[in-house]
Image 1 (cartoon, rainbow, N blue to C red):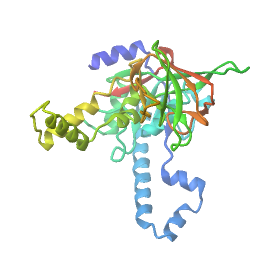
Image 2 (cartoon, rainbow, N blue to C red; image 1 turned 180 degrees about the vertical axis):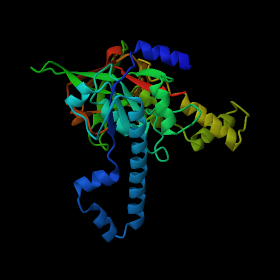
Image 3 (cartoon, one colour; image 1 turned 135 degrees about the vertical axis):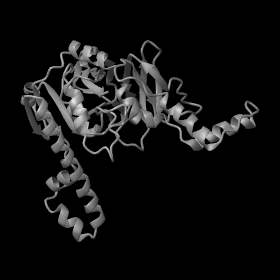
Image 4 (cartoon, rainbow, N blue to C red; image 1 turned 180 degrees about the horizontal axis):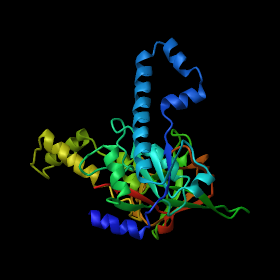
Length: 351
Protein backbone atom coordinates (compact mmCIF):
# COMPACT_ATOMS: atom_id res chain seq x y z
CA UNK A 1 0.00 0.00 0.00
CA UNK A 2 2.82 2.40 0.85
CA UNK A 3 4.52 1.61 -2.47
CA UNK A 4 1.29 2.29 -4.32
CA UNK A 5 0.95 5.60 -2.50
CA UNK A 6 4.49 6.66 -3.42
CA UNK A 7 4.02 5.76 -7.08
CA UNK A 8 0.75 7.66 -7.24
CA UNK A 9 2.34 10.60 -5.45
CA UNK A 10 5.08 10.71 -8.07
CA UNK A 11 2.46 10.47 -10.81
CA UNK A 12 0.58 13.41 -9.24
CA UNK A 13 3.86 15.31 -8.67
CA UNK A 14 3.57 15.65 -4.90
CA UNK A 15 6.76 17.52 -4.04
CA UNK A 16 5.60 20.69 -2.28
CA UNK A 17 7.82 23.48 -1.00
CA UNK A 18 5.27 26.12 -0.07
CA UNK A 19 2.58 25.01 2.37
CA UNK A 20 -0.42 27.15 3.27
CA UNK A 21 -2.26 26.19 6.46
CA UNK A 22 -5.86 27.40 6.56
CA UNK A 23 -7.17 27.14 10.10
CA UNK A 24 -10.79 27.07 11.13
CA UNK A 25 -12.30 29.86 13.16
CA UNK A 26 -13.41 28.30 16.42
CA UNK A 27 -16.76 29.24 17.84
CA UNK A 28 -15.05 31.43 20.42
CA UNK A 29 -13.22 33.39 17.71
CA UNK A 30 -16.19 33.56 15.36
CA UNK A 31 -18.66 34.78 17.98
CA UNK A 32 -16.19 37.26 19.46
CA UNK A 33 -15.63 38.79 16.03
CA UNK A 34 -19.39 39.20 15.62
CA UNK A 35 -20.04 40.29 19.20
CA UNK A 36 -16.98 41.76 21.03
CA UNK A 37 -18.77 41.30 24.39
CA UNK A 38 -19.62 37.65 23.66
CA UNK A 39 -17.72 36.19 26.66
CA UNK A 40 -19.09 38.80 29.06
CA UNK A 41 -22.62 38.23 27.76
CA UNK A 42 -22.35 34.48 28.43
CA UNK A 43 -21.10 35.14 31.95
CA UNK A 44 -23.88 37.65 32.57
CA UNK A 45 -26.46 35.15 31.32
CA UNK A 46 -25.16 32.53 33.75
CA UNK A 47 -23.98 30.21 30.96
CA UNK A 48 -20.73 29.32 32.73
CA UNK A 49 -20.74 25.67 31.66
CA UNK A 50 -21.28 26.65 28.02
CA UNK A 51 -18.42 29.13 28.20
CA UNK A 52 -16.07 26.54 29.73
CA UNK A 53 -16.93 24.05 26.97
CA UNK A 54 -16.45 26.66 24.21
CA UNK A 55 -13.07 27.71 25.62
CA UNK A 56 -12.05 24.07 25.97
CA UNK A 57 -12.72 23.35 22.31
CA UNK A 58 -10.82 26.52 21.34
CA UNK A 59 -7.82 25.49 23.45
CA UNK A 60 -7.78 21.97 21.95
CA UNK A 61 -7.75 23.45 18.45
CA UNK A 62 -4.98 25.93 19.29
CA UNK A 63 -2.84 23.24 20.88
CA UNK A 64 -3.14 20.93 17.87
CA UNK A 65 -2.60 23.82 15.46
CA UNK A 66 0.69 24.57 17.21
CA UNK A 67 1.78 20.95 16.72
CA UNK A 68 0.80 21.09 13.03
CA UNK A 69 2.82 24.26 12.37
CA UNK A 70 5.88 22.98 14.26
CA UNK A 71 5.93 19.66 12.44
CA UNK A 72 5.25 21.13 8.99
CA UNK A 73 8.12 23.59 9.43
CA UNK A 74 10.31 20.67 10.31
CA UNK A 75 9.64 19.00 6.95
CA UNK A 76 8.82 21.75 4.42
CA UNK A 77 10.66 24.88 3.24
CA UNK A 78 7.94 27.52 3.65
CA UNK A 79 4.84 27.32 5.83
CA UNK A 80 2.28 30.13 6.23
CA UNK A 81 -0.88 30.36 8.33
CA UNK A 82 -4.18 32.10 7.45
CA UNK A 83 -7.83 31.74 8.42
CA UNK A 84 -9.20 32.81 5.01
CA UNK A 85 -7.63 32.47 1.59
CA UNK A 86 -7.54 34.76 -1.43
CA UNK A 87 -6.23 34.58 -5.01
CA UNK A 88 -2.68 35.46 -3.95
CA UNK A 89 -2.65 32.54 -1.51
CA UNK A 90 -3.91 30.18 -4.20
CA UNK A 91 -1.15 31.24 -6.59
CA UNK A 92 1.57 31.07 -3.91
CA UNK A 93 1.01 27.67 -2.30
CA UNK A 94 1.99 24.25 -3.63
CA UNK A 95 -0.22 22.45 -1.14
CA UNK A 96 -3.03 23.55 1.16
CA UNK A 97 -3.57 22.16 4.65
CA UNK A 98 -7.00 22.62 6.23
CA UNK A 99 -6.59 22.66 10.01
CA UNK A 100 -10.01 21.95 11.48
CA UNK A 101 -12.69 19.46 10.51
CA UNK A 102 -14.65 18.59 7.39
CA UNK A 103 -16.26 22.02 7.30
CA UNK A 104 -12.88 23.71 7.07
CA UNK A 105 -11.83 21.29 4.33
CA UNK A 106 -14.98 22.11 2.31
CA UNK A 107 -14.47 25.85 2.72
CA UNK A 108 -10.90 25.65 1.41
CA UNK A 109 -11.88 23.28 -1.40
CA UNK A 110 -14.45 25.80 -2.64
CA UNK A 111 -11.62 28.24 -3.41
CA UNK A 112 -9.43 25.83 -5.39
CA UNK A 113 -9.37 24.85 -9.04
CA UNK A 114 -9.01 21.27 -10.17
CA UNK A 115 -5.59 19.66 -9.80
CA UNK A 116 -4.68 21.50 -6.58
CA UNK A 117 -3.45 19.67 -3.48
CA UNK A 118 -5.62 19.87 -0.36
CA UNK A 119 -4.91 17.82 2.77
CA UNK A 120 -7.10 17.90 5.87
CA UNK A 121 -5.73 17.65 9.41
CA UNK A 122 -8.30 17.23 12.19
CA UNK A 123 -7.60 19.58 15.11
CA UNK A 124 -10.37 18.21 17.34
CA UNK A 125 -10.73 14.44 16.79
CA UNK A 126 -12.64 14.10 20.06
CA UNK A 127 -15.56 16.04 18.59
CA UNK A 128 -15.12 15.62 14.83
CA UNK A 129 -14.90 12.41 12.79
CA UNK A 130 -13.12 14.21 9.96
CA UNK A 131 -14.00 11.93 7.02
CA UNK A 132 -12.22 14.29 4.63
CA UNK A 133 -9.09 14.57 6.78
CA UNK A 134 -5.99 12.42 6.47
CA UNK A 135 -6.18 9.62 8.99
CA UNK A 136 -4.52 6.40 10.06
CA UNK A 137 -5.99 2.98 9.31
CA UNK A 138 -4.66 1.90 12.71
CA UNK A 139 -6.72 4.69 14.35
CA UNK A 140 -3.65 6.72 15.34
CA UNK A 141 -4.56 10.38 15.93
CA UNK A 142 -1.00 11.55 16.63
CA UNK A 143 -0.52 14.57 14.37
CA UNK A 144 3.28 14.26 14.42
CA UNK A 145 3.00 10.75 13.02
CA UNK A 146 0.47 11.77 10.37
CA UNK A 147 2.54 14.75 9.17
CA UNK A 148 5.73 12.68 9.05
CA UNK A 149 3.99 10.07 6.89
CA UNK A 150 2.72 12.82 4.58
CA UNK A 151 6.18 14.38 4.26
CA UNK A 152 7.73 11.01 3.43
CA UNK A 153 5.01 10.19 0.88
CA UNK A 154 3.95 7.07 2.73
CA UNK A 155 0.27 7.68 2.10
CA UNK A 156 -2.70 6.65 0.03
CA UNK A 157 -3.21 9.53 -2.38
CA UNK A 158 -6.60 10.07 -4.01
CA UNK A 159 -8.28 12.40 -6.50
CA UNK A 160 -11.56 13.55 -4.95
CA UNK A 161 -14.26 13.94 -7.57
CA UNK A 162 -16.29 17.17 -7.57
CA UNK A 163 -19.59 18.21 -9.14
CA UNK A 164 -19.73 21.05 -11.64
CA UNK A 165 -22.96 22.89 -12.41
CA UNK A 166 -23.96 24.60 -15.66
CA UNK A 167 -27.08 26.77 -15.69
CA UNK A 168 -29.11 27.39 -18.86
CA UNK A 169 -31.50 30.32 -19.10
CA UNK A 170 -34.24 30.68 -21.72
CA UNK A 171 -33.71 34.45 -21.85
CA UNK A 172 -30.70 36.38 -23.15
CA UNK A 173 -28.28 35.14 -20.49
CA UNK A 174 -27.69 31.77 -22.14
CA UNK A 175 -25.46 29.14 -20.50
CA UNK A 176 -23.57 30.03 -17.32
CA UNK A 177 -20.92 27.86 -15.67
CA UNK A 178 -21.05 28.27 -11.88
CA UNK A 179 -17.45 29.10 -10.89
CA UNK A 180 -17.50 26.75 -7.91
CA UNK A 181 -17.51 22.98 -7.47
CA UNK A 182 -19.28 20.78 -4.93
CA UNK A 183 -16.97 18.36 -3.15
CA UNK A 184 -19.62 16.70 -0.98
CA UNK A 185 -23.13 17.41 -2.23
CA UNK A 186 -25.61 19.70 -3.92
CA UNK A 187 -29.16 20.40 -2.75
CA UNK A 188 -31.72 21.44 -5.36
CA UNK A 189 -35.16 22.64 -4.33
CA UNK A 190 -37.23 25.28 -2.60
CA UNK A 191 -35.61 27.70 -0.20
CA UNK A 192 -38.29 27.09 2.42
CA UNK A 193 -38.19 23.56 3.90
CA UNK A 194 -41.99 23.69 4.38
CA UNK A 195 -42.76 24.13 0.66
CA UNK A 196 -42.77 21.19 -1.76
CA UNK A 197 -40.04 21.35 -4.41
CA UNK A 198 -41.34 20.87 -7.96
CA UNK A 199 -38.63 19.66 -10.35
CA UNK A 200 -38.35 17.98 -13.73
CA UNK A 201 -35.48 15.49 -13.68
CA UNK A 202 -33.57 13.73 -16.41
CA UNK A 203 -31.11 11.11 -15.18
CA UNK A 204 -28.52 10.26 -17.84
CA UNK A 205 -30.58 9.31 -20.93
CA UNK A 206 -33.69 8.14 -19.09
CA UNK A 207 -37.01 9.87 -19.88
CA UNK A 208 -37.62 13.11 -17.99
CA UNK A 209 -39.85 12.86 -14.92
CA UNK A 210 -41.65 15.55 -12.92
CA UNK A 211 -41.51 15.12 -9.15
CA UNK A 212 -42.71 16.91 -6.05
CA UNK A 213 -40.60 16.31 -2.97
CA UNK A 214 -38.67 17.88 -0.10
CA UNK A 215 -35.84 18.56 -2.54
CA UNK A 216 -33.26 16.67 -4.56
CA UNK A 217 -29.82 15.71 -3.25
CA UNK A 218 -26.78 14.93 -5.42
CA UNK A 219 -23.58 13.69 -3.79
CA UNK A 220 -20.08 12.52 -4.65
CA UNK A 221 -18.13 9.62 -3.20
CA UNK A 222 -16.65 12.07 -0.68
CA UNK A 223 -20.18 13.11 0.25
CA UNK A 224 -21.41 9.53 0.61
CA UNK A 225 -20.35 9.64 4.28
CA UNK A 226 -22.14 12.96 4.88
CA UNK A 227 -25.72 14.13 4.17
CA UNK A 228 -26.29 11.40 1.60
CA UNK A 229 -25.36 8.74 4.15
CA UNK A 230 -27.81 10.02 6.75
CA UNK A 231 -30.57 10.53 4.18
CA UNK A 232 -30.34 6.80 3.38
CA UNK A 233 -29.56 5.44 6.83
CA UNK A 234 -31.84 3.09 8.72
CA UNK A 235 -31.95 2.90 12.49
CA UNK A 236 -32.24 -0.37 14.40
CA UNK A 237 -35.93 0.25 15.18
CA UNK A 238 -36.88 0.36 11.49
CA UNK A 239 -34.74 -2.66 10.70
CA UNK A 240 -36.44 -4.62 13.48
CA UNK A 241 -39.90 -3.56 12.28
CA UNK A 242 -39.11 -4.57 8.71
CA UNK A 243 -37.91 -8.00 9.83
CA UNK A 244 -41.07 -8.39 11.92
CA UNK A 245 -43.23 -7.72 8.85
CA UNK A 246 -41.26 -10.37 6.94
CA UNK A 247 -41.89 -12.89 9.72
CA UNK A 248 -45.57 -12.00 9.99
CA UNK A 249 -45.90 -12.41 6.21
CA UNK A 250 -44.33 -15.87 6.39
CA UNK A 251 -41.38 -14.81 4.25
CA UNK A 252 -38.87 -15.74 6.94
CA UNK A 253 -38.84 -17.40 10.33
CA UNK A 254 -35.49 -15.90 11.31
CA UNK A 255 -35.50 -13.89 14.56
CA UNK A 256 -32.43 -11.72 15.20
CA UNK A 257 -31.09 -10.58 18.54
CA UNK A 258 -30.15 -6.94 19.16
CA UNK A 259 -26.51 -7.45 18.18
CA UNK A 260 -27.48 -9.05 14.86
CA UNK A 261 -30.00 -6.30 14.15
CA UNK A 262 -27.33 -3.67 14.76
CA UNK A 263 -24.94 -5.51 12.44
CA UNK A 264 -27.55 -5.76 9.66
CA UNK A 265 -28.40 -2.07 10.05
CA UNK A 266 -24.75 -1.02 9.87
CA UNK A 267 -24.11 -3.19 6.82
CA UNK A 268 -27.11 -1.69 5.04
CA UNK A 269 -26.05 1.87 5.83
CA UNK A 270 -22.42 1.30 4.88
CA UNK A 271 -23.47 -0.14 1.52
CA UNK A 272 -24.14 3.41 0.32
CA UNK A 273 -20.55 4.58 0.91
CA UNK A 274 -18.43 4.57 -2.24
CA UNK A 275 -14.92 5.78 -3.19
CA UNK A 276 -14.13 9.49 -3.39
CA UNK A 277 -12.46 8.96 -6.80
CA UNK A 278 -15.63 7.48 -8.34
CA UNK A 279 -16.95 9.74 -11.09
CA UNK A 280 -20.55 8.69 -10.52
CA UNK A 281 -22.96 10.92 -8.64
CA UNK A 282 -25.42 9.53 -6.10
CA UNK A 283 -28.89 11.08 -6.29
CA UNK A 284 -31.77 10.95 -3.82
CA UNK A 285 -35.27 12.40 -4.05
CA UNK A 286 -36.02 13.48 -0.49
CA UNK A 287 -39.47 12.44 0.75
CA UNK A 288 -41.07 12.16 -2.71
CA UNK A 289 -44.79 12.92 -2.94
CA UNK A 290 -46.62 9.70 -3.81
CA UNK A 291 -50.36 9.95 -4.41
CA UNK A 292 -52.97 9.48 -7.13
CA UNK A 293 -51.61 12.50 -9.06
CA UNK A 294 -47.84 12.33 -8.54
CA UNK A 295 -45.86 9.10 -8.65
CA UNK A 296 -42.09 9.44 -8.42
CA UNK A 297 -40.58 6.35 -10.02
CA UNK A 298 -36.86 7.15 -10.13
CA UNK A 299 -36.05 8.36 -6.63
CA UNK A 300 -32.53 7.04 -6.01
CA UNK A 301 -29.51 5.74 -7.87
CA UNK A 302 -26.23 6.69 -9.54
CA UNK A 303 -25.68 8.83 -12.61
CA UNK A 304 -22.98 10.37 -14.79
CA UNK A 305 -25.15 13.32 -15.86
CA UNK A 306 -28.22 14.88 -14.25
CA UNK A 307 -30.31 17.67 -15.79
CA UNK A 308 -32.98 19.43 -13.73
CA UNK A 309 -35.56 22.02 -14.83
CA UNK A 310 -36.89 24.19 -12.04
CA UNK A 311 -40.64 24.42 -11.54
CA UNK A 312 -40.14 26.02 -8.14
CA UNK A 313 -41.53 29.24 -6.68
CA UNK A 314 -38.27 30.21 -4.99
CA UNK A 315 -35.74 27.56 -5.89
CA UNK A 316 -32.10 27.37 -4.85
CA UNK A 317 -29.05 25.33 -5.70
CA UNK A 318 -26.94 24.94 -2.56
CA UNK A 319 -23.41 23.55 -2.80
CA UNK A 320 -21.67 22.04 0.25
CA UNK A 321 -23.75 24.05 2.70
CA UNK A 322 -25.42 27.44 2.84
CA UNK A 323 -22.27 29.45 2.08
CA UNK A 324 -22.68 28.87 -1.66
CA UNK A 325 -26.21 29.08 -2.99
CA UNK A 326 -27.62 30.19 -6.32
CA UNK A 327 -31.10 31.13 -7.47
CA UNK A 328 -32.90 28.42 -9.40
CA UNK A 329 -35.99 30.12 -10.77
CA UNK A 330 -38.88 28.61 -12.69
CA UNK A 331 -37.82 27.40 -16.14
CA UNK A 332 -34.07 27.46 -15.52
CA UNK A 333 -32.13 24.32 -16.46
CA UNK A 334 -29.17 23.01 -14.46
CA UNK A 335 -26.81 20.27 -15.60
CA UNK A 336 -24.67 18.37 -13.08
CA UNK A 337 -21.59 16.42 -14.15
CA UNK A 338 -18.13 15.43 -12.93
CA UNK A 339 -14.78 15.60 -14.70
CA UNK A 340 -11.26 14.44 -13.91
CA UNK A 341 -9.94 17.96 -14.49
CA UNK A 342 -12.13 19.27 -11.64
CA UNK A 343 -10.88 16.74 -9.07
CA UNK A 344 -8.79 17.69 -6.05
CA UNK A 345 -5.60 15.84 -5.14
CA UNK A 346 -5.68 14.73 -1.52
CA UNK A 347 -4.64 12.13 1.03
CA UNK A 348 -7.01 9.60 2.59
CA UNK A 349 -4.79 7.34 4.70
CA UNK A 350 -1.23 7.75 5.96
CA UNK A 351 -0.43 4.05 6.49
